[in-house]
Length: 191
Image (cartoon, rainbow, N blue to C red; front, side):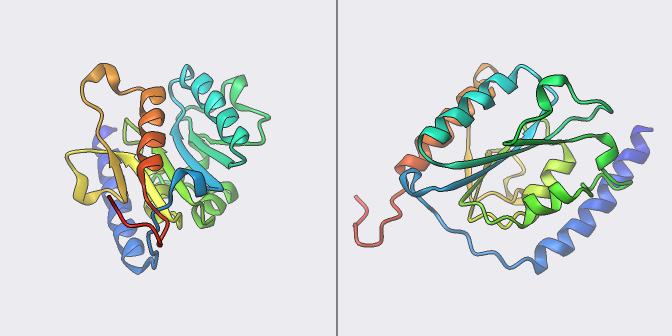
Protein backbone atom coordinates (compact mmCIF):
# COMPACT_ATOMS: atom_id res chain seq x y z
CA UNK A 1 0.00 0.00 0.00
CA UNK A 2 2.75 2.46 0.97
CA UNK A 3 4.66 1.58 -2.22
CA UNK A 4 1.69 2.52 -4.43
CA UNK A 5 1.16 5.74 -2.49
CA UNK A 6 4.77 6.76 -3.17
CA UNK A 7 4.36 6.02 -6.89
CA UNK A 8 1.14 8.06 -7.08
CA UNK A 9 2.74 11.00 -5.27
CA UNK A 10 5.81 10.81 -7.52
CA UNK A 11 3.56 10.96 -10.61
CA UNK A 12 1.63 13.86 -9.13
CA UNK A 13 4.87 15.73 -8.33
CA UNK A 14 5.95 15.36 -11.97
CA UNK A 15 2.63 16.82 -13.16
CA UNK A 16 2.89 19.57 -10.56
CA UNK A 17 6.40 20.47 -11.75
CA UNK A 18 5.08 20.99 -15.29
CA UNK A 19 2.27 23.20 -13.99
CA UNK A 20 4.57 25.32 -11.82
CA UNK A 21 6.92 25.94 -14.76
CA UNK A 22 4.03 27.51 -16.67
CA UNK A 23 2.89 29.49 -13.63
CA UNK A 24 3.52 33.21 -14.03
CA UNK A 25 3.63 34.70 -10.58
CA UNK A 26 5.64 37.71 -9.47
CA UNK A 27 6.43 37.60 -5.74
CA UNK A 28 5.75 40.76 -3.78
CA UNK A 29 7.15 41.43 -0.34
CA UNK A 30 4.75 43.38 1.83
CA UNK A 31 4.99 44.73 5.35
CA UNK A 32 2.58 43.45 7.99
CA UNK A 33 0.97 46.90 8.28
CA UNK A 34 0.01 46.83 4.57
CA UNK A 35 -1.39 43.30 4.41
CA UNK A 36 -5.13 43.09 3.70
CA UNK A 37 -5.61 39.40 2.79
CA UNK A 38 -4.01 36.28 4.25
CA UNK A 39 -4.51 32.66 3.27
CA UNK A 40 -3.44 29.83 5.54
CA UNK A 41 -2.90 26.24 4.47
CA UNK A 42 -3.13 24.01 7.51
CA UNK A 43 -2.55 20.33 8.25
CA UNK A 44 -5.68 19.85 10.36
CA UNK A 45 -4.61 16.47 11.73
CA UNK A 46 -3.86 17.91 15.18
CA UNK A 47 -7.15 19.30 16.48
CA UNK A 48 -5.36 21.13 19.33
CA UNK A 49 -3.98 23.62 16.77
CA UNK A 50 -7.52 24.81 16.04
CA UNK A 51 -7.56 26.96 19.19
CA UNK A 52 -4.37 28.73 18.07
CA UNK A 53 -5.77 29.36 14.59
CA UNK A 54 -9.01 30.73 16.01
CA UNK A 55 -6.99 33.17 18.12
CA UNK A 56 -4.91 34.13 15.07
CA UNK A 57 -8.12 34.73 13.12
CA UNK A 58 -9.33 37.06 15.89
CA UNK A 59 -5.99 38.93 15.86
CA UNK A 60 -6.20 39.40 12.08
CA UNK A 61 -9.81 40.64 12.34
CA UNK A 62 -8.67 43.30 14.81
CA UNK A 63 -6.11 44.44 12.20
CA UNK A 64 -8.84 44.47 9.53
CA UNK A 65 -7.16 41.64 7.62
CA UNK A 66 -9.33 39.17 5.71
CA UNK A 67 -8.15 35.67 6.69
CA UNK A 68 -9.11 32.40 5.01
CA UNK A 69 -7.95 29.00 6.18
CA UNK A 70 -7.94 25.89 4.04
CA UNK A 71 -7.21 22.78 6.06
CA UNK A 72 -6.63 19.18 5.09
CA UNK A 73 -7.94 16.46 7.39
CA UNK A 74 -6.95 12.98 6.11
CA UNK A 75 -9.99 11.27 7.63
CA UNK A 76 -13.43 10.72 6.15
CA UNK A 77 -15.39 12.76 8.72
CA UNK A 78 -14.36 16.18 10.01
CA UNK A 79 -14.25 16.88 13.74
CA UNK A 80 -17.26 18.98 14.80
CA UNK A 81 -15.17 22.08 15.57
CA UNK A 82 -14.01 22.28 11.91
CA UNK A 83 -17.51 22.68 10.50
CA UNK A 84 -19.79 25.69 9.99
CA UNK A 85 -17.02 28.30 10.05
CA UNK A 86 -16.93 31.13 7.54
CA UNK A 87 -13.19 31.67 7.71
CA UNK A 88 -12.21 28.00 7.35
CA UNK A 89 -12.80 25.16 4.93
CA UNK A 90 -11.44 21.68 5.43
CA UNK A 91 -10.68 19.15 2.73
CA UNK A 92 -11.25 15.50 3.54
CA UNK A 93 -9.90 12.31 2.04
CA UNK A 94 -12.72 12.14 -0.53
CA UNK A 95 -11.86 15.69 -1.75
CA UNK A 96 -8.54 14.39 -3.08
CA UNK A 97 -8.13 12.54 -6.38
CA UNK A 98 -6.13 9.36 -7.11
CA UNK A 99 -2.90 11.38 -7.37
CA UNK A 100 -3.54 13.23 -4.07
CA UNK A 101 -4.50 16.49 -5.79
CA UNK A 102 -7.37 18.54 -4.32
CA UNK A 103 -10.34 18.65 -6.69
CA UNK A 104 -12.94 20.73 -4.86
CA UNK A 105 -14.21 24.14 -5.91
CA UNK A 106 -12.92 25.58 -2.63
CA UNK A 107 -9.37 24.32 -3.26
CA UNK A 108 -9.30 25.68 -6.82
CA UNK A 109 -10.69 29.02 -5.62
CA UNK A 110 -8.05 29.15 -2.88
CA UNK A 111 -5.28 28.49 -5.42
CA UNK A 112 -6.52 31.28 -7.70
CA UNK A 113 -7.11 33.87 -4.98
CA UNK A 114 -4.36 36.49 -4.95
CA UNK A 115 -3.73 36.71 -1.21
CA UNK A 116 -1.19 39.30 -0.07
CA UNK A 117 0.40 36.51 1.99
CA UNK A 118 0.01 32.74 2.03
CA UNK A 119 1.13 31.04 5.26
CA UNK A 120 1.81 27.34 4.93
CA UNK A 121 1.34 25.32 8.15
CA UNK A 122 2.17 21.92 6.74
CA UNK A 123 4.81 20.57 9.09
CA UNK A 124 4.15 16.92 8.13
CA UNK A 125 4.37 17.70 4.40
CA UNK A 126 0.89 16.57 3.39
CA UNK A 127 0.99 16.46 -0.42
CA UNK A 128 -2.47 18.03 -1.06
CA UNK A 129 -1.37 21.14 0.86
CA UNK A 130 2.01 21.22 -0.90
CA UNK A 131 0.15 21.05 -4.21
CA UNK A 132 -2.02 24.05 -3.30
CA UNK A 133 0.87 26.14 -1.99
CA UNK A 134 2.93 25.40 -5.12
CA UNK A 135 0.19 26.62 -7.45
CA UNK A 136 -1.10 29.48 -5.30
CA UNK A 137 -1.12 32.93 -6.89
CA UNK A 138 -0.43 34.63 -3.54
CA UNK A 139 1.89 37.63 -3.60
CA UNK A 140 4.18 36.18 -0.94
CA UNK A 141 4.36 32.60 0.25
CA UNK A 142 5.69 31.85 3.74
CA UNK A 143 6.62 28.38 4.90
CA UNK A 144 8.76 26.38 7.30
CA UNK A 145 12.43 26.11 6.31
CA UNK A 146 13.46 22.62 5.31
CA UNK A 147 16.46 20.71 4.02
CA UNK A 148 14.66 20.50 0.65
CA UNK A 149 14.56 24.32 0.34
CA UNK A 150 15.19 24.29 -3.41
CA UNK A 151 12.03 22.25 -3.98
CA UNK A 152 9.76 24.39 -1.83
CA UNK A 153 7.54 27.12 -3.32
CA UNK A 154 8.17 29.70 -0.59
CA UNK A 155 9.46 33.27 -0.88
CA UNK A 156 10.13 33.52 2.87
CA UNK A 157 11.10 30.52 4.98
CA UNK A 158 11.02 30.50 8.76
CA UNK A 159 13.50 28.26 10.58
CA UNK A 160 12.49 27.09 14.04
CA UNK A 161 15.26 25.49 16.06
CA UNK A 162 14.59 22.49 18.28
CA UNK A 163 11.68 20.08 18.17
CA UNK A 164 9.87 21.76 21.06
CA UNK A 165 9.67 25.09 19.21
CA UNK A 166 7.98 23.63 16.11
CA UNK A 167 4.40 24.33 17.01
CA UNK A 168 1.75 26.40 15.28
CA UNK A 169 1.62 29.21 17.83
CA UNK A 170 5.40 29.78 17.85
CA UNK A 171 5.53 29.52 14.07
CA UNK A 172 2.75 32.10 13.54
CA UNK A 173 4.44 34.48 16.00
CA UNK A 174 7.68 34.17 14.02
CA UNK A 175 5.86 34.74 10.74
CA UNK A 176 4.30 37.95 12.10
CA UNK A 177 7.65 39.06 13.50
CA UNK A 178 9.41 38.70 10.14
CA UNK A 179 6.55 40.19 8.13
CA UNK A 180 6.73 43.21 10.43
CA UNK A 181 10.43 43.59 9.61
CA UNK A 182 9.88 43.80 5.85
CA UNK A 183 10.36 47.29 4.47
CA UNK A 184 7.91 47.51 1.58
CA UNK A 185 7.74 51.30 1.28
CA UNK A 186 9.69 52.35 -1.84
CA UNK A 187 10.61 55.85 -0.59
CA UNK A 188 12.36 54.59 2.56
CA UNK A 189 15.95 53.40 2.37
CA UNK A 190 16.88 50.12 4.01
CA UNK A 191 18.87 50.54 7.19
